[in-house]
Image (cartoon, rainbow, N blue to C red; front, side):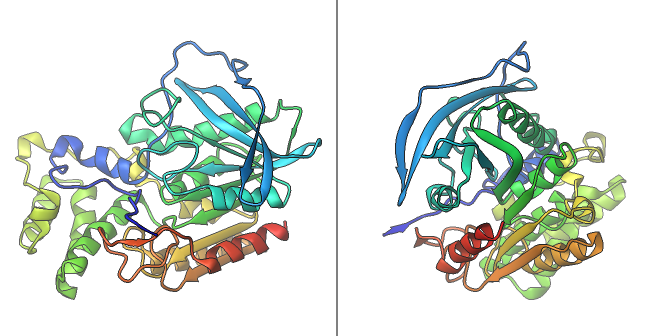
Length: 369
């Protein structure tokens, strides 16, 4: 069976680069989720009725769970092994864009693995995609999503059937920014699995993605390198002259305008991006202090997150942290979501099945926890 995978780092950027939406879009590169709920108390959460559901070979007790997080109401699904005891739990964290508790990429194969090894699994709808309500602040989506993880763990700590002494995170794409930020917000995360997460800030990662658009349209190596360099300079510019010089260089690259809609802002309309927004958050700064077990995957042909830079950034950061339990994998022939690809370029028709190496490596690593 063939399907078109909608990748989840960044929406089609055409026309999105006028000044007023520039950092909104790069914050979108890093991902969206949550819901608006005014006046919730922390104990305002609840479970729905139990259902029995099948995930591959595994049977699970499934309960809907709703809980508040800041101004959001989050609604998701907790699946527990069909055994009457407390279970450790895995939180599954989406990438950017719309997604329900079932995942923008299929969650069921990973849910089956986690259930098979005794873990309960929680995932939730993102606002606009299901029952969750609320709207993210575009410049602070990563921060708000990390706070949702913290609040979910707090809610689970009051459960009679969850053992919060072991809370793992699995996440893809933008989750590679969200989960490291969550590590700084709660000490209750035991381990982390990162799939195609970035090893640099969102602006640098966005520059890689735009450069790969040019590469996929047979741009020259010189043009691709120029786009990656000057796209980041444009978005990080502290002065108008710095911004203008970068845009002038970018607009000379064939195909850049057609793919992005980039235009030059007038000086009176331009202002530098605020340095405190999430687009400037670099997960490596957290990874350099991370000593919990970490499993990371990168797809060799990923055109959305830089796999080579990410691989080496994770390795260097976790070594610096003195982490004694980490594994970083480069999956040959894989694209952004761990399926087999030929090029990894946008629009490629790819298979719907995850690569066996990815699933087998994940399962073996979980067995060792």
